[in-house]
Image (cartoon, rainbow, N blue to C red; front, side, top):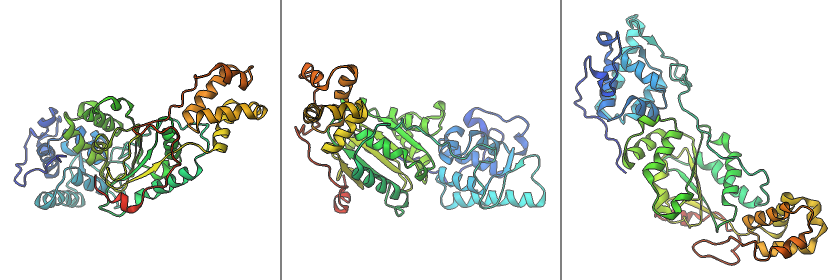
Length: 403
């Protein structure tokens, strides 16, 4: 993936036309822009970013960036300075010059020479807002509702919950945690993922992104389009989303860097289709579902393989869907339904839909009249008739294998 390169160390500072990179002129400020404002505009232009793209990458509002470049805000908050340095990939001399301009602006403030611009400087802990009253980071909340009738999977839920809960505490340099819930069609992968993800919203305070990748199963995914959807979910205006997969990926990585964000990739294609959508931050996590095996194919991925529901859990799910009294009244017919469904949650829901459709009929009558009507939708690349029991999260040695 091609990263946006830092601007040259020999950038010329723009004069009155510095805002022309976005086609906007700021009335009444052309002669009064500070060195910091001019330097910020120069670095942004050198990085090939619009004001909207820089704002998204730095976790600031577009208004805050515009006010800084126009000189309406003379001294940015300390956290905003750090965010801008990271978003612009400033290193070496570029970084020192930028921080020097910030320091000079603060000295001017102390000497009372700020002029008409606003002073948003604050204590080191400031920064919940970006100086305009706007929250510094848009917080996406894209998760679909969790299934209200989720049943069973206690061991799997506990294992997945623990792995995701610990993900933001991974040591630096380890990359983003990737948790893969895999299994055949109808195994309840999405239900388990959403049930768990909703319970961990406080673990990921910077938000939850969600992509349904079902359409990608028919061919190679349109990665550029999917990255655009992720960027829009992160608050990037449609007009600020760059063209092409590589620029979009670079901006996506900048915006998500350091954020405690959960990305849910539902019904994912193979590892090659997932890899470009992974953020690059140890503070966040990716939870994906799919029929493929990802352990050993995505670096650092942990895999939880789902098998059929155990008999008691399968019966409990059926009872929740059609009513416990009806299930208790016909144990033999219920046993036949459970056997036909083979513990596959989607098959159980299909059976329950038949039963709910005929509330006055006995289960025996519905079962007899629907012969062949309940296809067990289990399968995947290996298409097993009776899937194996769920396995534990893969071992550390398996997780260390490169794709």
